[in-house]
Length: 308
Length: 288
Image (tube, rainbow over all chains, first blue to last red; front, top):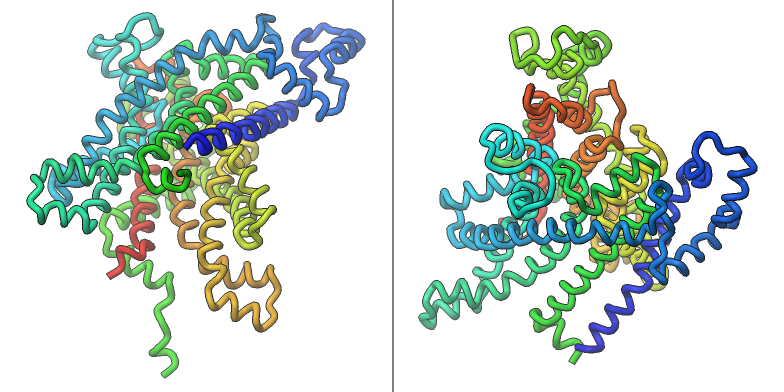
């Protein structure tokens, strides 16, 4: 098992190098010189050239990338063009808010999605199942930003129950986390249902029933344990969508997270901040997926046995 | 006689199974209507004279006989804009997925067919792309290339390449050792002929399912990018941009935000219904 964990941890290194390479490469395509952006419109060509030299922008792409990685390893992702603060600090400051939002949304998705999927599967083709599936389908089809605005309209504007923006109290977390979590809830519901349906047709479930195990136990112990294995993978992948969706959700609710920082920085062409935000989110996503895969290896005896 | 014993083609078989699925047919029906709206948008409401014509004296009006879905913040007819928006969304969605299928499919086919180091290099690269949530990758691309319809299609398309590469690769691996491929090789067919004429046609089914769902995802991403101001520019009607424009008037005129969102939702719903139906129709385990 240690070998598996170690192997996966080591694999994270090339993936991270790849991610930084892609993001750096894409951002490198941005037209206009960062030195010009930093100095403003009035700068003379000499001033720009001098700053470009100082920033290392006159060097070939691959050297610039190498320097970026070298500094990045020391936690130095450059300074914001606007605030001149270290980018890493800015992103790190905003990160807890995004994490809080994503975790709250994921909690909603898991707490509602798994039970809903189980109920739907055990009552296949009944009214409960149909209603759940229609709701889930609507859930995956709804644009996250639209849902956010509609929730604001209903719960903040019309009913006045919940705040529509900001992040000072737990009340502020309710609407954004529902908004962000809804499509994941729907996806987890659908996945749990189909996985459960597959499992309850297996022979070992028939065996369990035949030997007189109570139905509750058949479902909760024999079926659920196996049905949840693919659901765990989906949860890990959904976390990535959540981090992506957080960008839109944060923008709707003015939630002070990395996503909002990124959008604001794009508008101001503050490239180092944009770059660091994307890299930071990608690293988080990779670590979560790694954790999920390791967890997966622990709960799925088929993988576990390969490494013993 | 030969005709009679000929096996039903896989497409015929798929259609037979699909047409009994009511939900899938509902999705297909809605989708056909949306496509017709998009194709005949100009005949339904003129782009120049209605969809982008501003008249601030009638701004933010609710639905009425003249404007069945009301007017937006510039007094433009919402219905006309939504109909023309269907054109933009479907076009961007389909072309983006087309880009992803062509590039991703080629990479996946090559990786699956040749295996070995080439497979490893391609698929590990795809893994790296998958580590960046696709909407973020699209945001990065658009913010760097600048926002235009072409860049939007590229961004959304590129960010979903890995999905198609994976699916095509898996599919190619599952058919490449079949007897008909061996037969083709035995009669001296070249690799690219084997891939294009024998392997791809037999491994395309899962790609179609993914493409249907993928267009839905691409439309959502496009709307999301436009919503945060990185998509299609005014005055061109795009659902996400319309929603974003109406945001400041959420309290006064909620319909400006509500209707484009409903249009997005109906489109995505129809594609999801059809995609789910196709998946079931192609699932060998569900065959009777």
